[in-house]
Amino acid sequence: MSKTYRAEFFTSADWAHHDIAAATPAEALEKARRFYDDNLADLDFRSYDAIEPLDRVQIWDGERGILAEWESAGYRLQLAAGALRDALAAETEAAQAVIDHWERGDLAGAVRALAATLGEARAALAKAQGDHL
Image (cartoon, rainbow, N blue to C red; front, side):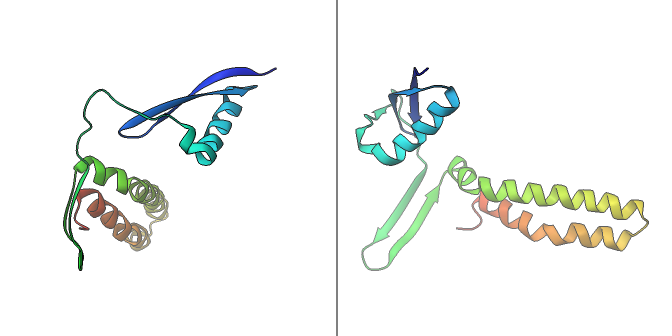
């Protein structure tokens, strides 16, 4: 038996809704994702009442492209989220390896396990802090 669910779609500046007929909320979510991909023009996006904060400014030159740019801390964090997640997962595994090596009395192995992941972690932090610009 099908039920009508209200699917709400959100961007950082706009929102829209559309009714979806489905048997379960999970099915409605799957249908809503497909609807967005296939029928974006059919969604009537509306702006939020408040002005959204500024995420990014670029200064362009028609011949040379981007000459200067600024990104908000929140935007940088959003861009870096995947790298930060991956770095945290790698550091978590490295910490476990340190514990495992330490328990076996292998201090050098523990240090090598930890050192192997520091580059990825530093790069992710630099990206989140805007040091990559």
